[in-house]
Every structure is written in C-alpha cells, then in structure tokens.
Image 1 (cartoon, helix red, strand yellow):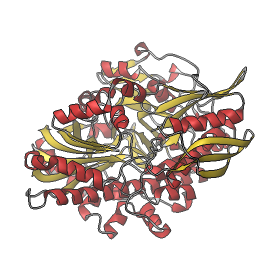
Image 2 (cartoon, rainbow over the protein chains, first blue to last red):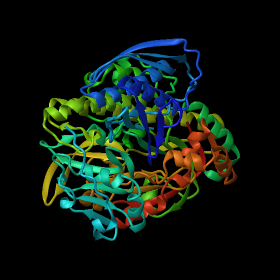
Image 3 (tube, one colour):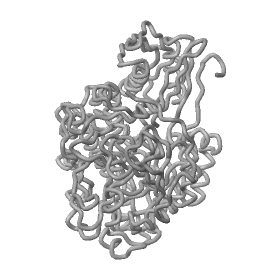
Image 4 (cartoon, rainbow over the protein chains, first blue to last red):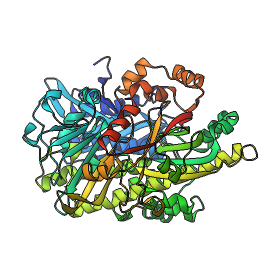
Length: 137
Length: 491
C-alpha cells in the first residue's frame, strides 16, 4: 500500500477492483470511501462546503461495507456532489454512523455504477483489517 | 450462507470437447456443482477465457438451485462479478431460484438498431455535424441528468408501461414498440417493490446514455450474409444505421443493489449455500423472489423507455442536420434487444415442455423462427439479434435459430468480450491518440472523457468476428449483416 491512503487498485477484466486497509474497521471504511471517490477521478482538493450525516446498516460486516459504499454512490448521483473527507463516527458489525464532507459538483466524474459482493472478504490482519472490493463500471 | 469454493485452477484439459464449438466441464468437476458447465468457444477463445476468473465464475453459476441442463457461457465470456459476462442459467419453475446477480446492476442493458434509407455516402459531408448533434442531444456520463424530470405518477407509468409510455408522450412510433423485445413493456412490473432511492436516481435519467461501454454509433452496412433476412429487416449494403447501447441507468443499479443486499439474509433464511455472495438468490415463487422479479421488470421498462427517448433524440438530430440536404434520412427501428435480464420462458428439454426462469447476463435472447414473442412481420424469419463490436470495429446483425432454442434456451452472444482490464487499457492506450487514429480512419468521435475512451479501446476486446463465427458454426445464431462504424458518441 503506497502512501497514507492505504488503498491500491487491482486488475479486473471488465470492471474495477481495489484493496483497502485500515488499522481498525472505522479506518478501513473511511479509506474504502476515499478509494471509491479517488478511482472515479474525483477531486480530493475540495472546499468541503457540503456536509452529510448518514446511518447505514447491514446483516454483517461485509454487507455493511457494501451498503456504506453504495450509499455514497447514491448520494453523489442524486445530489450531484463529490466527497473528499469521511468520518466514521460510530461503527459495529451491523451499523455505521458517518459524516461526509465535499462539494456540490455537477461536472464531477461519476463512473462507478455499483459496489458488488463478488469475492468480498473483510479479513483481520495482525495490525488491522483488509478488504478487496469489486465495483461495476 | 455463502461459502468459499474449493480452490482449483481450471485448465483446458479439464474440459470434454462436445463438438467443434462446445466445451464441457462435467458435474463432478467440483463438489458443489448441480449441473455441468458448457462454454461455446473455439480453441483460442477458450484459452482467452482461461486467462481470468470467468470460467470459475461459470462453474459457480452451476451451483444455483433448480438449474436446468447446464450453466452456459457464450464465446464473448469474460470476468464479471457473480455471473461471468456472457452467462446463461435457466432454473426450472416453480422450484427454481431467481438471482439479482444473474441479471446484474444494469438491468436490461441492451442494444437498439435504427436504419435510414439514406446511404453513408450521402450523409458523409455532414458526418461531423451529425456526430456533434448526437453528442449534444443525448446526455452522457454516469450521473448525468436528462431533459425529462418525472414526477412520481409519471415515473410509475414509465416503470409499468416502458416504451409504451413514450408513445403517449409522442416520443415513439407503433413500429418501434412492435420491433422491441417484449414489445417495449416487460410484464409483471410493480413499482410497489421499488425503493425510494431507486426512484430518486431514475427521476432525471430517462433519455440519457450513461458511461462505461455505453455508446451511440452511426454505422454503414458493410456486408450482407443472408439476403432474404436482410430484406425483411430493411437492411441493404451501404445503408446508414445507428446503434444505441445503454440500459436502466441509476434506477436499475439501485434496484439491483437493494435486492443483492437484502438477499444476503434471504439465502440464510432458505438455507441456500453459494460459492459467491454476489450470486445470492431466492426461490422464484417466494415473496422475496417475486418482489425482486417485479422490481426488475420496472427497471427493464425504465431501460426500454430510456432507449426509446434516445431514439427520439437521434431522429431529432438527423432532422436538425440532414433535413433539406439528404433524401430519406428518417430512421426506422430494426429491433431492440436486452442482454441483462431474467425472464419467464417455456422451453423443451429432453422432450418435456417446461417453464423456467432464464437469466441472461451479457447474453442475448435469440429466438428462432416461429417462436412466441416475435413481431408478426418477422415471425417466420426469427428474432433479430444485435451484436455490437468494440469501438471502431465491426458489429453484426444476426437472427435467432432453431439451434439456439434447442441448445441454449434461445440465447446467443452479446458482443466482443473484454480481454484487457480497464487499468491495462489506460496504461497502454492514450485516449487522444486513439481518437486521432479513429478520426484518421474516417470515424467521427465525440467523447466526454479521454481516459474513458482509452478504457474502451478496440485492443481491450476480443475479435467480434471470431465470436460471431463461433455462434454461427454452433448453430445458435445466423449472420445477416456486418456493420462498420462511421461515427462514435460516448460519455
């Protein structure tokens, strides 16, 4: 994992995939959100004029991760916004509360259709967590 | 609950060659298979398929409860998520399942072909202007909004009536509906099972193209292989035709997301074990299965309406640019097909007529002559099948055959099929250079994103002619015409 972003894109024939790491689940979820926006080519140098609070649930950790990322795609699509900072305020295996910070950005690239469960595993590492996520483009 | 499949590398030697174009992995290849897996390919395409995880994904689909005969993959197979792209799985009803992942996020992604009486030579002086008008009039990009903003009541009409809604708005002709799969309206749609989020995402997106591999392409008919069928479809050499490739936009993505997430619990409730969580499913006749099917039908209708509105915008563009300059520029609809769908169909297996849920994920319905569901004027010809090639290369018009009815539940391939990842394509090809190369070949290009253009470079795809030759030799499609591009419009 290069730099402090702690994600890297991995090869996938038709769609796109990326691996993310975090020292804990909250960090992993925030890094995954950052990766989702970064690989769409959205700007990370924003003024953060938009703030949104979200609550997401899922039947397990993997479902929670997919639902969280899909919630971001939904918000960026409907409100025509892009986000550059993510704060996970509270997290369990089945529930998450977070805030998103970004900007109204009609021209921003929104190139990901959906986040999938394909081959998804959220695995503990000696120093944190790792997940590889496949997205439909 | 999902379980991981046993890890096993799949080699060419694991397959039994059933015929020149059909390769089979027997049911005992992996313990969790409920049926054999069959792949349509020549030797080179089989080897290409073994280059990524697509064959393992094909094997995974053979574990779905209620599967009939075998899991099938077309020669344009490539790695997807859950199902491989190019996959066909039929499950016997009433006991079989329906899987949202077997349809995918872009529900009723499909292709529409419009044809003019004007030749490519006649429109060539105005080609650049025409490409610009198409780019301007047909909004593109993943989250882009169109001219039409639907209030709740009218959105529900779109979801129930599909392209027929567009006729009420003066955006469709009767012949368009007659020459659309399901006549432009998928039965069984019930908006009650569609989430608020899906409605919000769809409200502004009817009449928009999207991004990724979606496109509008102006082509010329470069070759005719089946003169009788071509004449019946209204195709002739040198003709100007237009392809539209797109689907149900954010609306369909959200419907799929909603049900894939919900079915993570449903599979536990029904005790269904699967090798990949993207394959989650529910018994077709269960409340959950029916609710997905009815929501999916809404998304299918959204896509039919979307391609219909785009067809209207394309006709408008032709009129804006060509009126008074070119004779007979009007566009009639050849056909509109879906290639991501689950449908209830009747097929005969081993002499037994049965009802089944046919999942086609990157595969096209290809009903043969005399099949139900074909328009009256094409009933004796067979269903038109539209196979777009990669950008800048040929596309094909086929017709369905009796062979496709007997072998593949009335299905055939859907395109060229990727071989390069998007990251490799972007590293290898520069969008600006590709655009120049296409322009040098006389192809007008209008694209919103140069990296997006590079991702869709022709080098990233298999040879569509080879794919089509396999399905023709296997008898699951018959070539009618080859199209060559003269203008490409992309998000």
